Image (cartoon, rainbow, N blue to C red; front, top):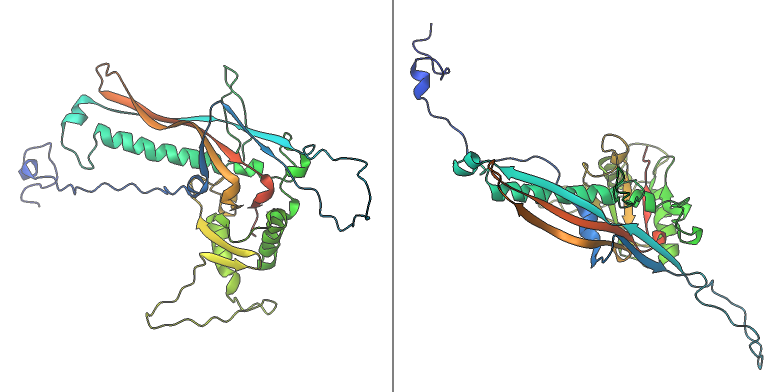
Amino acid sequence: MAFSNTYNVTNPGSGVSNREDLTDVLTILAPEETPVLSLANKSKATATFNEWTVDALAAPSATGIQEGADISSFTDKFTGRARLGNYIQLFRRDFMVSQLQQAVESVGPAKLAEAEAKGVREIKRDMEKVLCGDQDRSVEDGSSTRYVSRGLGDWIDDTGPADVPSGFRTPVGSIHSSGTLTESAFNTLISSIYTQTGTVDKLSLVAGTTLRRTISQFARSDNNTNENVYHVNQMATDKEITLSVNTYDSDFGIITVINGNPACMPDPSATGKNRGYIINPDYLGVAELMSLGSTRVPDQGGGQRGFVDAAAGLQVFSPLAHGKITVVV
């Protein structure tokens, strides 16, 4: 039988005088990186519908010109120009702290400034989720429909969107949506993107967790007799073996491999693990109508309160410049 309780602070006994042992540490365990938002160029929007133009060069010609030949016809160089656009989306996270919570000492702490900072962190993840999403754009109708910005998953599509002319849609060769993603298939994607842009060393792969591991396995052996095995010598003086792949050196340039935020990739419980976007940052942007900021509202007696908000939309300056992976297998 216990001499006197040490656990019950509501009934008489020694437990009522025991002090709390609450460590002054606050842990928030959640993925916070926003790689797509970080890669995108930032610009200023001036309306809720942000637009840009795209154009293309004529196919190269090897036909010579006969000496002395006059020009009988002239070419309009702008007939193929098109206008693309996306809607700005409003993002908002509210916060408040009661008068008593603001007054007491707390671990963390749990004050108004910390609530505001947490809102900023949450809204950046909201923006990343929209940028990585498969949703189409929509316009505010004053009722139930809100402004929604089209995500990368819908921009990078060989059959659409409907408002993108067929000549500016992502080629089917730049999208892997069926079958096993082998190293050969991955190089085919990169080759297709290079065919459109002609540039190297500017691509970044933002990858879901399963896709990330698949890329790392490209140079490893699993005793499959049909696979190509590459032997790499590595100095072991530091007693460390590197098995991760952060850069992939392809025939068409170096691709930087970045972990996508698992909470922000489309459907993180399923396809988001396989999802990957091969991005050329030169052709990706975010237009900001309202920069991320904080607003305090009047205290009506319940405590200080406010909200953080932003209005921004994704810019895909040319869907031809990017690639997408939806299936790894």
